[in-house]
Image 1 (tube, rainbow, N blue to C red):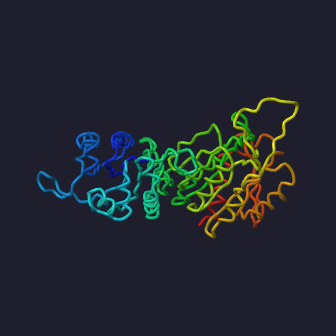
Image 2: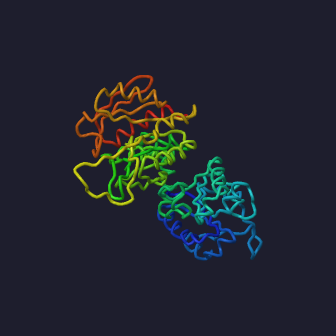
Image 3: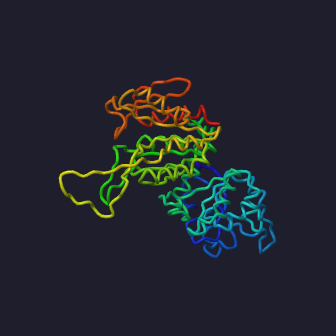
Length: 410
């Protein structure tokens, strides 16, 4: 959906500036018209001649042309563009954008921009992790800017792998998906859903958790993560920014609005979910989380000695219960219940106890659904009652669940 779109590409002084050539090529390949605005520091990493050859347009860097004094109008650029993409964006430029320090052509163009702005940070991990940088990004998000962060694993800091600019193709796909989700494009293509969740941030948990016994063994379950990943794709397709906290699965996602946080244990998932939830408008807790973990994890592989082995288990933290306590009046919390007996009664009890807005019930009595299957058959239970759905593919089930979410999210 980038055909005919006018894109202002801002380039700053980062070692990742060379990747801007790949971004331009991909934008042009998809039919976009690109105008580059580069900072003085950016020209130290890549030459305007190279960029101009790719865009077929003179590169804008200074307020006035050095040759004839022609004034480059940042106001006109702000009116001309359908979107502004700043990639790579350094910590310095992030700070200037957040605080309106208009000391170069790129920042003045940004401050004049009438179109959506997309930012792809690029810096080393220490700079990225600094509270000032994090605060500047939150400020830009509060202004309505879109921050395109690379996918990463999860450490205690929550910042593993961060700082590196996202891959150029994924950055361009992010823009492509954004324009694909706009109401005008959806209407012309006959799509049922538009950008209902645009501007919303959704937390989704998916897959199993593994609770280590020793370096080579664990306690786990059969969850494939297919339902959670289908929900993530559905929310992203409707315009949401998705934080997908995923246990160990073989699935991948390429949607640019989905940020995957990979975890292994319940405690890691708990930490990631409680960290992300305050900034989200909703959470869908689809993961099959272990209720218990071994009290002691052996440092070396346990050898077979005797005829029996006892493993003492202790409770894991309850993610749904904790998010239910944290939930604010304007947040929506969705749970899942997989039951083998007394399904509705157990699900209703979980709904009330954990302060959920609605709960998705599925049962192992329904053969060929749930674990490892591409099919599911669910009921949605809320304080308003219960609605049963037919058996269908998990991506269609995800659509039903997100329909219910959209009816409740503010």
